Length: 379
Ligand code: SF4
Image (cartoon, rainbow, N blue to C red; front, side, top):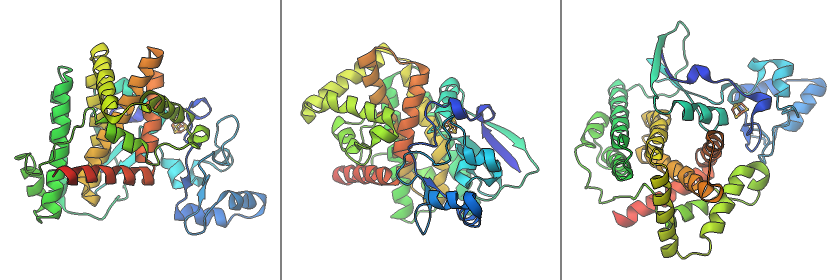
Protein backbone atom coordinates (compact mmCIF):
# COMPACT_ATOMS: atom_id res chain seq x y z
CA UNK A 1 0.00 0.00 0.00
CA UNK A 2 1.10 3.55 -0.67
CA UNK A 3 2.13 5.25 2.58
CA UNK A 4 2.57 9.02 2.73
CA UNK A 5 4.54 10.23 5.74
CA UNK A 6 4.92 13.81 6.88
CA UNK A 7 8.50 14.81 6.07
CA UNK A 8 9.80 14.72 9.67
CA UNK A 9 7.87 11.57 10.66
CA UNK A 10 10.89 9.27 10.90
CA UNK A 11 12.77 11.73 13.12
CA UNK A 12 10.33 11.28 16.00
CA UNK A 13 11.51 9.30 18.96
CA UNK A 14 9.85 9.60 22.37
CA UNK A 15 11.98 11.56 24.86
CA UNK A 16 10.73 9.31 27.70
CA UNK A 17 12.50 10.23 30.97
CA UNK A 18 13.94 13.37 29.34
CA UNK A 19 10.52 14.74 28.32
CA UNK A 20 9.80 18.16 29.89
CA UNK A 21 6.03 17.74 29.42
CA UNK A 22 5.20 14.06 29.51
CA UNK A 23 1.96 12.93 27.86
CA UNK A 24 1.56 10.50 30.80
CA UNK A 25 0.57 13.46 32.98
CA UNK A 26 -2.28 15.93 32.67
CA UNK A 27 -4.58 13.66 30.65
CA UNK A 28 -7.20 11.02 31.12
CA UNK A 29 -5.98 7.89 29.31
CA UNK A 30 -8.93 6.19 27.59
CA UNK A 31 -8.59 2.44 27.15
CA UNK A 32 -9.66 0.48 24.06
CA UNK A 33 -11.79 -2.68 24.24
CA UNK A 34 -8.91 -5.08 23.56
CA UNK A 35 -6.76 -3.52 26.30
CA UNK A 36 -9.70 -3.58 28.73
CA UNK A 37 -10.18 -7.33 28.11
CA UNK A 38 -6.45 -7.97 28.36
CA UNK A 39 -6.12 -6.04 31.61
CA UNK A 40 -9.26 -7.56 33.18
CA UNK A 41 -8.00 -11.09 32.46
CA UNK A 42 -4.76 -10.56 34.35
CA UNK A 43 -4.45 -12.43 37.66
CA UNK A 44 -2.38 -11.98 40.81
CA UNK A 45 -0.77 -8.80 42.06
CA UNK A 46 -0.35 -7.37 38.55
CA UNK A 47 -4.03 -7.99 37.81
CA UNK A 48 -4.98 -6.29 41.05
CA UNK A 49 -2.81 -3.29 40.21
CA UNK A 50 -4.44 -3.02 36.80
CA UNK A 51 -7.95 -3.29 38.22
CA UNK A 52 -7.20 -0.58 40.75
CA UNK A 53 -5.82 1.69 38.02
CA UNK A 54 -8.90 1.32 35.76
CA UNK A 55 -11.66 3.80 36.51
CA UNK A 56 -15.18 3.84 35.05
CA UNK A 57 -17.43 0.88 34.26
CA UNK A 58 -18.46 1.34 30.62
CA UNK A 59 -15.24 2.65 29.07
CA UNK A 60 -12.59 2.58 31.79
CA UNK A 61 -9.58 4.85 31.68
CA UNK A 62 -6.37 5.39 33.60
CA UNK A 63 -5.83 8.68 35.42
CA UNK A 64 -9.48 9.90 35.27
CA UNK A 65 -8.64 13.16 37.04
CA UNK A 66 -5.76 13.86 34.68
CA UNK A 67 -2.96 13.79 37.25
CA UNK A 68 -0.52 11.12 36.14
CA UNK A 69 -0.68 7.61 34.79
CA UNK A 70 -0.25 5.19 37.70
CA UNK A 71 2.31 3.27 35.63
CA UNK A 72 4.55 6.29 35.04
CA UNK A 73 7.76 5.72 37.02
CA UNK A 74 9.70 8.43 38.81
CA UNK A 75 12.43 8.22 36.15
CA UNK A 76 9.79 9.22 33.55
CA UNK A 77 9.62 5.76 31.93
CA UNK A 78 6.52 3.62 31.48
CA UNK A 79 6.42 0.81 34.07
CA UNK A 80 3.92 -1.19 32.01
CA UNK A 81 6.03 -1.06 28.86
CA UNK A 82 9.15 -2.06 30.77
CA UNK A 83 7.36 -5.01 32.36
CA UNK A 84 5.26 -6.26 29.44
CA UNK A 85 6.61 -4.69 26.24
CA UNK A 86 5.14 -2.15 23.84
CA UNK A 87 2.56 -4.51 22.28
CA UNK A 88 0.88 -4.95 25.65
CA UNK A 89 0.05 -1.24 26.06
CA UNK A 90 -3.37 0.29 25.42
CA UNK A 91 -3.76 1.38 21.80
CA UNK A 92 -3.53 5.09 22.57
CA UNK A 93 -0.21 4.64 24.42
CA UNK A 94 1.19 2.53 21.57
CA UNK A 95 0.16 4.94 18.84
CA UNK A 96 0.47 8.44 20.35
CA UNK A 97 1.62 10.89 19.00
CA UNK A 98 1.22 9.27 15.58
CA UNK A 99 -1.87 10.11 13.53
CA UNK A 100 -3.07 7.68 10.86
CA UNK A 101 -5.58 8.36 8.11
CA UNK A 102 -6.38 5.43 5.85
CA UNK A 103 -9.34 5.78 3.47
CA UNK A 104 -8.59 2.32 2.01
CA UNK A 105 -6.40 3.09 -1.00
CA UNK A 106 -3.44 4.70 0.79
CA UNK A 107 -2.33 5.73 4.28
CA UNK A 108 -1.22 9.11 5.58
CA UNK A 109 0.98 9.17 8.67
CA UNK A 110 1.47 12.37 10.62
CA UNK A 111 2.42 13.49 14.12
CA UNK A 112 0.39 15.28 16.77
CA UNK A 113 1.76 18.64 17.95
CA UNK A 114 0.37 18.09 21.45
CA UNK A 115 3.56 16.05 22.01
CA UNK A 116 6.27 18.52 22.94
CA UNK A 117 8.94 16.75 20.92
CA UNK A 118 6.73 16.75 17.82
CA UNK A 119 6.20 20.50 18.36
CA UNK A 120 10.00 20.88 18.42
CA UNK A 121 10.33 18.90 15.18
CA UNK A 122 7.58 20.98 13.61
CA UNK A 123 9.42 24.22 14.47
CA UNK A 124 12.61 22.81 12.93
CA UNK A 125 10.86 21.79 9.72
CA UNK A 126 7.95 24.19 9.45
CA UNK A 127 9.20 25.77 6.23
CA UNK A 128 9.10 22.45 4.43
CA UNK A 129 6.13 20.31 5.29
CA UNK A 130 5.46 17.71 2.65
CA UNK A 131 4.66 14.04 2.33
CA UNK A 132 7.30 11.42 1.61
CA UNK A 133 5.77 8.50 -0.30
CA UNK A 134 6.73 4.86 -0.07
CA UNK A 135 5.19 1.53 -1.11
CA UNK A 136 4.96 -1.04 1.68
CA UNK A 137 3.85 -4.65 1.84
CA UNK A 138 2.09 -4.01 5.13
CA UNK A 139 -1.72 -3.81 4.97
CA UNK A 140 -3.30 -0.91 6.87
CA UNK A 141 -6.68 -0.98 8.55
CA UNK A 142 -9.19 1.51 7.10
CA UNK A 143 -9.87 4.39 9.52
CA UNK A 144 -13.50 5.08 8.50
CA UNK A 145 -16.43 3.77 6.45
CA UNK A 146 -16.64 6.23 3.59
CA UNK A 147 -15.71 4.78 0.20
CA UNK A 148 -16.68 7.69 -2.05
CA UNK A 149 -13.50 8.01 -4.11
CA UNK A 150 -14.69 11.07 -6.05
CA UNK A 151 -15.21 12.89 -2.75
CA UNK A 152 -11.81 11.75 -1.47
CA UNK A 153 -10.04 13.05 -4.57
CA UNK A 154 -11.91 16.37 -4.44
CA UNK A 155 -11.13 16.71 -0.74
CA UNK A 156 -7.42 16.16 -1.29
CA UNK A 157 -7.48 18.72 -4.07
CA UNK A 158 -9.33 21.18 -1.85
CA UNK A 159 -6.78 20.73 0.98
CA UNK A 160 -3.92 21.34 -1.46
CA UNK A 161 -5.61 24.50 -2.74
CA UNK A 162 -6.24 25.84 0.78
CA UNK A 163 -2.60 25.18 1.71
CA UNK A 164 -1.52 27.11 -1.39
CA UNK A 165 -3.81 30.01 -0.42
CA UNK A 166 -2.17 30.19 3.03
CA UNK A 167 1.39 29.65 1.78
CA UNK A 168 1.08 32.28 -0.97
CA UNK A 169 -0.35 34.83 1.43
CA UNK A 170 2.58 34.43 3.82
CA UNK A 171 5.36 34.60 1.24
CA UNK A 172 6.16 38.27 1.93
CA UNK A 173 5.48 38.10 5.66
CA UNK A 174 2.54 40.51 5.29
CA UNK A 175 0.10 40.04 8.21
CA UNK A 176 -2.73 41.65 6.23
CA UNK A 177 -2.37 39.08 3.45
CA UNK A 178 -2.45 36.20 5.95
CA UNK A 179 -5.47 37.75 7.67
CA UNK A 180 -7.32 37.85 4.33
CA UNK A 181 -6.28 34.31 3.44
CA UNK A 182 -7.46 32.84 6.76
CA UNK A 183 -10.77 34.62 6.41
CA UNK A 184 -11.17 33.20 2.89
CA UNK A 185 -10.38 29.67 4.05
CA UNK A 186 -12.97 29.82 6.85
CA UNK A 187 -15.64 31.37 4.62
CA UNK A 188 -14.86 28.73 1.97
CA UNK A 189 -15.34 25.99 4.56
CA UNK A 190 -18.62 27.49 5.78
CA UNK A 191 -19.85 27.73 2.19
CA UNK A 192 -18.91 24.15 1.32
CA UNK A 193 -20.56 22.85 4.49
CA UNK A 194 -23.77 24.83 3.84
CA UNK A 195 -23.86 23.68 0.24
CA UNK A 196 -23.56 20.03 1.26
CA UNK A 197 -25.76 20.10 4.35
CA UNK A 198 -28.43 22.66 3.51
CA UNK A 199 -28.59 22.58 -0.28
CA UNK A 200 -27.73 18.91 -0.83
CA UNK A 201 -25.00 19.69 -3.37
CA UNK A 202 -22.82 16.65 -4.14
CA UNK A 203 -19.42 16.73 -2.42
CA UNK A 204 -17.09 17.30 -5.42
CA UNK A 205 -19.31 20.11 -6.77
CA UNK A 206 -19.62 21.75 -3.35
CA UNK A 207 -15.85 21.61 -2.84
CA UNK A 208 -15.25 23.12 -6.25
CA UNK A 209 -17.93 25.81 -6.16
CA UNK A 210 -16.81 26.87 -2.66
CA UNK A 211 -13.81 28.53 -4.34
CA UNK A 212 -15.96 30.44 -6.79
CA UNK A 213 -17.81 32.61 -4.30
CA UNK A 214 -17.15 34.07 -0.90
CA UNK A 215 -19.79 36.62 0.04
CA UNK A 216 -22.98 34.53 0.11
CA UNK A 217 -22.62 33.52 3.73
CA UNK A 218 -22.53 37.20 4.77
CA UNK A 219 -20.05 36.11 7.41
CA UNK A 220 -16.61 37.65 7.39
CA UNK A 221 -14.88 36.54 10.56
CA UNK A 222 -11.84 38.40 11.87
CA UNK A 223 -9.36 35.56 12.16
CA UNK A 224 -5.92 37.14 12.58
CA UNK A 225 -6.08 38.16 15.31
CA UNK A 226 -9.45 37.03 16.68
CA UNK A 227 -11.19 39.89 18.55
CA UNK A 228 -10.24 39.92 22.23
CA UNK A 229 -13.90 39.64 23.26
CA UNK A 230 -14.09 36.31 21.46
CA UNK A 231 -10.74 35.16 22.85
CA UNK A 232 -12.01 36.07 26.30
CA UNK A 233 -15.14 33.98 25.78
CA UNK A 234 -12.99 31.09 24.58
CA UNK A 235 -10.79 31.36 27.66
CA UNK A 236 -13.89 31.28 29.86
CA UNK A 237 -14.84 27.83 28.59
CA UNK A 238 -13.37 24.82 30.33
CA UNK A 239 -10.07 25.93 28.72
CA UNK A 240 -8.95 27.55 31.96
CA UNK A 241 -9.51 26.00 35.39
CA UNK A 242 -7.85 26.50 38.74
CA UNK A 243 -7.05 22.79 38.94
CA UNK A 244 -4.85 23.16 35.87
CA UNK A 245 -1.99 24.41 38.04
CA UNK A 246 -1.49 20.76 39.09
CA UNK A 247 -2.02 19.02 35.76
CA UNK A 248 -0.80 21.54 33.16
CA UNK A 249 1.22 24.11 35.13
CA UNK A 250 2.62 25.87 32.05
CA UNK A 251 -0.84 26.47 30.59
CA UNK A 252 -2.04 27.66 33.99
CA UNK A 253 0.82 30.16 34.10
CA UNK A 254 0.01 31.38 30.56
CA UNK A 255 -3.69 31.81 31.38
CA UNK A 256 -2.80 33.73 34.56
CA UNK A 257 -0.58 35.99 32.45
CA UNK A 258 -3.52 36.64 30.17
CA UNK A 259 -5.94 37.44 32.99
CA UNK A 260 -3.43 39.71 34.76
CA UNK A 261 -2.91 41.64 31.54
CA UNK A 262 -6.51 41.98 30.36
CA UNK A 263 -8.78 41.46 33.35
CA UNK A 264 -9.06 45.08 34.42
CA UNK A 265 -9.71 46.39 30.91
CA UNK A 266 -13.11 46.92 29.29
CA UNK A 267 -13.70 45.01 26.03
CA UNK A 268 -13.02 48.21 24.11
CA UNK A 269 -9.73 48.97 25.88
CA UNK A 270 -8.83 45.30 25.83
CA UNK A 271 -9.25 45.22 22.05
CA UNK A 272 -7.05 48.31 21.67
CA UNK A 273 -4.41 46.71 23.90
CA UNK A 274 -4.57 43.40 22.02
CA UNK A 275 -4.19 45.18 18.67
CA UNK A 276 -1.23 47.15 20.10
CA UNK A 277 0.46 43.99 21.38
CA UNK A 278 -0.21 42.18 18.11
CA UNK A 279 1.23 45.01 15.96
CA UNK A 280 4.29 45.34 18.23
CA UNK A 281 4.87 41.57 18.17
CA UNK A 282 4.61 41.29 14.38
CA UNK A 283 6.71 44.45 13.81
CA UNK A 284 9.44 43.08 16.10
CA UNK A 285 9.26 39.58 14.62
CA UNK A 286 7.99 39.81 11.01
CA UNK A 287 9.22 36.24 10.35
CA UNK A 288 6.43 35.09 12.67
CA UNK A 289 3.83 35.58 9.92
CA UNK A 290 5.38 32.71 7.98
CA UNK A 291 5.51 30.64 11.17
CA UNK A 292 1.82 31.20 11.83
CA UNK A 293 1.01 30.29 8.24
CA UNK A 294 3.12 27.14 8.67
CA UNK A 295 1.26 26.27 11.87
CA UNK A 296 -2.10 26.67 10.12
CA UNK A 297 -0.83 24.59 7.20
CA UNK A 298 0.17 21.87 9.63
CA UNK A 299 -3.30 22.01 11.14
CA UNK A 300 -4.89 21.58 7.69
CA UNK A 301 -2.53 18.72 6.90
CA UNK A 302 -3.40 16.94 10.14
CA UNK A 303 -7.14 17.52 10.42
CA UNK A 304 -8.76 18.57 7.13
CA UNK A 305 -9.08 15.01 5.78
CA UNK A 306 -11.29 14.20 8.81
CA UNK A 307 -14.00 15.93 6.76
CA UNK A 308 -14.05 12.72 4.71
CA UNK A 309 -15.93 11.10 7.58
CA UNK A 310 -17.50 13.96 9.54
CA UNK A 311 -18.17 16.69 6.92
CA UNK A 312 -17.29 19.31 9.58
CA UNK A 313 -15.47 21.77 7.34
CA UNK A 314 -16.10 24.77 9.54
CA UNK A 315 -14.92 22.94 12.65
CA UNK A 316 -11.65 21.79 11.13
CA UNK A 317 -10.75 25.15 9.60
CA UNK A 318 -11.94 27.29 12.52
CA UNK A 319 -10.31 25.17 15.21
CA UNK A 320 -6.96 25.89 13.52
CA UNK A 321 -7.72 29.62 13.73
CA UNK A 322 -8.49 29.23 17.43
CA UNK A 323 -5.30 27.24 18.10
CA UNK A 324 -3.24 29.75 16.13
CA UNK A 325 -4.68 32.71 18.05
CA UNK A 326 -4.24 31.12 21.46
CA UNK A 327 -0.60 30.27 20.68
CA UNK A 328 -0.02 33.77 19.27
CA UNK A 329 -1.61 35.38 22.32
CA UNK A 330 0.58 33.45 24.74
CA UNK A 331 3.69 33.98 22.65
CA UNK A 332 2.98 37.74 22.59
CA UNK A 333 2.38 37.94 26.33
CA UNK A 334 5.48 35.87 27.05
CA UNK A 335 7.67 38.14 24.94
CA UNK A 336 6.09 41.22 26.52
CA UNK A 337 7.02 39.91 29.94
CA UNK A 338 10.35 38.10 29.41
CA UNK A 339 11.51 39.88 26.19
CA UNK A 340 12.75 36.58 24.77
CA UNK A 341 11.33 33.17 23.88
CA UNK A 342 13.43 30.17 22.93
CA UNK A 343 12.32 27.56 20.39
CA UNK A 344 12.06 25.00 23.19
CA UNK A 345 9.76 27.30 25.18
CA UNK A 346 7.65 27.95 22.09
CA UNK A 347 7.40 24.20 21.47
CA UNK A 348 6.07 23.76 25.01
CA UNK A 349 3.52 26.53 24.49
CA UNK A 350 2.34 24.91 21.23
CA UNK A 351 2.13 21.53 22.91
CA UNK A 352 -0.02 22.66 25.89
CA UNK A 353 -2.33 24.72 23.66
CA UNK A 354 -2.81 21.77 21.32
CA UNK A 355 -3.64 19.53 24.27
CA UNK A 356 -6.25 21.88 25.61
CA UNK A 357 -7.86 23.06 22.36
CA UNK A 358 -7.96 19.80 20.41
CA UNK A 359 -7.88 17.05 23.01
CA UNK A 360 -10.60 18.18 25.35
CA UNK A 361 -14.06 17.46 24.01
CA UNK A 362 -15.78 19.92 26.33
CA UNK A 363 -13.46 22.77 25.38
CA UNK A 364 -13.68 21.94 21.69
CA UNK A 365 -17.49 21.78 21.77
CA UNK A 366 -17.87 25.00 23.75
CA UNK A 367 -15.46 26.82 21.47
CA UNK A 368 -17.31 25.70 18.36
CA UNK A 369 -20.66 26.69 19.85
CA UNK A 370 -19.32 30.22 20.33
CA UNK A 371 -18.01 30.46 16.81
CA UNK A 372 -21.33 29.21 15.42
CA UNK A 373 -23.14 31.82 17.51
CA UNK A 374 -20.91 34.51 15.98
CA UNK A 375 -21.65 33.15 12.51
CA UNK A 376 -25.42 33.15 13.04
CA UNK A 377 -25.31 36.64 14.54
CA UNK A 378 -23.61 38.16 11.53
CA UNK A 379 -25.07 36.00 8.75
S1 SF4 B 1 4.95 14.02 25.12
FE1 SF4 B 1 5.96 13.03 23.36
S2 SF4 B 1 8.14 12.94 23.87
FE2 SF4 B 1 7.01 13.38 25.78
S3 SF4 B 1 6.65 11.36 26.75
FE3 SF4 B 1 4.84 11.79 25.47
S4 SF4 B 1 5.27 10.89 23.42
FE4 SF4 B 1 7.23 11.01 24.56
